[in-house]
Length: 424
Image (cartoon, rainbow, N blue to C red; front, side, top):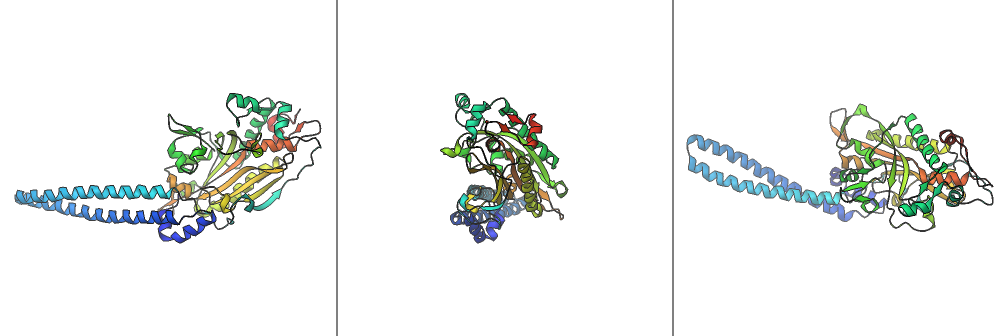
C-alpha cells in the first residue's frame, strides 16, 4: 500500500508513475486527498473540543472547591454538550479514515525507474539468454503425451478425483517432483535461506498484507466456513511471519525459503496454452523471500535473480530473463524479472519464475518496520521469487530430454536427488 506521505507530497508523481502500469489514478488520488483533508479538519476540531473539555473540567473543580455548586452544574451541562460534539467528530474521523483506506488499497505499487513502458507481455525486455536449445528427434512429443506413454502423470485420473488442473503424479513422475523440491531447497539453504514450512491456508489479514486482497480475491480458493484462503504462493504465509514486527538494522537481511503446494483458480484460462502442466489449479513450488533495508533491496533483487539463474543453469535448460514492462507487472510489484525456459516440443517459452522487489508496498500493509540509526521507525522492503515452480520446469525437462525411443534423460544435478537418470 502506498503511504499517505507520498500522496500528500507528490500526487502528480504518483499519477505519472502509475500511468506506466496503465493505471489511471487521478480520481482515486483526488478522493484520497479530499478524505484526508476532511479527516484532518475533523481532527483539528476534535483537538479544540477536547481542550475545551479539559479547561471546563478544571473550572468545575475550582467552583466545587469554592462551594459554587450551581455554577459548577451549569458548566457540567456545557461539558456534556462538548462530549457529544467530540463523539460526532470522532465518528466523522472514522468515516473519513475508512473512506481513505478503501481508496488506498485500490492503488497499485509504483513501478521503479528501471521498469520499461508497455502494455502487454510483448513489450517485456529480454535482459539475457542462456543455455543451449536442443535438437529433438523427428518423433518428439509434448510432455502430456510422453507422461501418458511413460505412465508418470495421469491427467484423466486427476479429473476423476477433482477436476481439470489437478494431475496425479505416479512412480518416477512423483519421484521427480520430490527430487526437484529437494534440489531447490538444497540450493536455497546453501545460499543462506532459512527453510520454513508454513500453513497452506491463511487468514484474511495475511492475504491482505501481501496484496492478494482485494486485488486477486477471485483467483484464490476460499474456505468460507472459517474465512480462510488457500495460498496461491508461499510468499503469503512466509512474508507474514514478520507482520506487525519492528526489527533492528542488524536483523537484515532476513532470508527464508519454503516448499508448499499452491492453489489458484486461474479463472478464465482456456485453450492450448493451458494443456498438461502448462497451467494448473494445484501445483508445487519452492519460494525464496527476503526482507531488506531500503537502500539494499535492489542489490538483493539482483542477487536473487543470479541465484535463480544458477539453478536453471544446473538443470541444463535453455532460458531467458525478462524485465517486465509496466502493463505486465503485478499489482504489488515495483520491479519484476521473469524467467522462462524453452520447450522444444511445444516450440514456446514457458514462464517458471518471477522475482520481484515490492519495496515498501507490502511492508506498509503489514506494518513491517525497523529502527534506523537515529532510532526512528522506518518501513522495510520485501522481495520474493519462485525458486522454482515445478510444473513447467518438469514439462521442459521431459520434452527437452527425450530421445527417439521416448526415454527421458535427467540432467546430472537432478539425477543425484532422484536416484535415477533415465525414465523409460
